[in-house]
Image 1 (cartoon, rainbow, N blue to C red):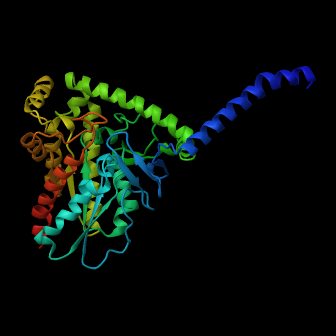
Image 2 (image 1 turned 120 degrees about the vertical axis):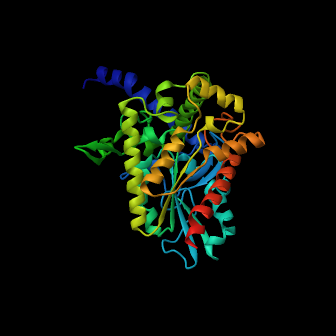
Image 3 (image 1 turned 45 degrees about the vertical axis):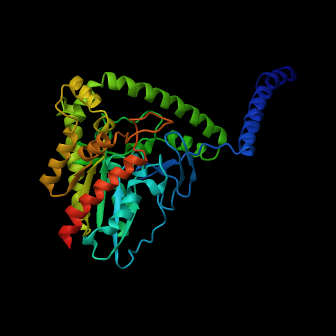
Length: 394
């Protein structure tokens, strides 16, 4: 390469590139010196597409505020011995972001409160309650079934509690209806093939998402960029929540609040039914009991009865409990108890005049359970488990 060309390459390419790299390095260093961090807790998982990064800890402040610590297995919980202590009644909780519950302090989560309050149940016959949380945000029933097999059953639980959220679990169980945005880690999903339910694992072909996740775990600058993207998403979600209350999306509403109106939603319900049955059979084969609880959707538990009735009127439905009744019917069909939270929590919200979903730094009445929501859910679950499970076993 002659000198004039080399000079132009240096001036036009290498010097600007070096300037950009130096600026990025200085920005990265400044963020570290200032202690500015927006930790990302998700990472790639070869079995479920995404999991929580073992050992990760830090503040979560996008919706609510809590300090998160992820244990060595990759769950938001304390460390637990695999061998069950003598005289212990173990409960394994499976679920999505409502079970992970990164919006509230760990001691305020429904599974922590439930673990403390179940001790008063006479059906325990003096046993100590130990609740293990295996909930991970973005999981549907497929990932929860895989988590049951990979980790939960190794701890010899006496009861497996699945927290089913009709608001998106149905879509997450369907390849066609999945709500996962393009930036999220692709995940496995069960599909029907030749009349059988088979696991589609094409998510393993995607390497770009893995690199993005790994990069964010090692760069404060990428954390900041990711936080800016998430802040933009929160604003869009807040606007969409307001619009949804004015005009709920018909296709989604028809699959959750009313009998499915098209083939895609019928398929989603069918896959969900088969997955719940499969989970029940595998739990029972281990010698444990399987219980499903249906997590509330925000419109169901708005404290203003007139607001709920307005939503029902605009949707053309009698009430907001179709999904809960259908899941309860599946429990009766396949022989597992279902503890529906929607109607009891609606009564609590109405009588006490409180929001059970939402936070002051997000949207009150929308999103995940706040501390009051977790307490209310724990109260109903403790009553249900005592009456439906422990009283019958004693």
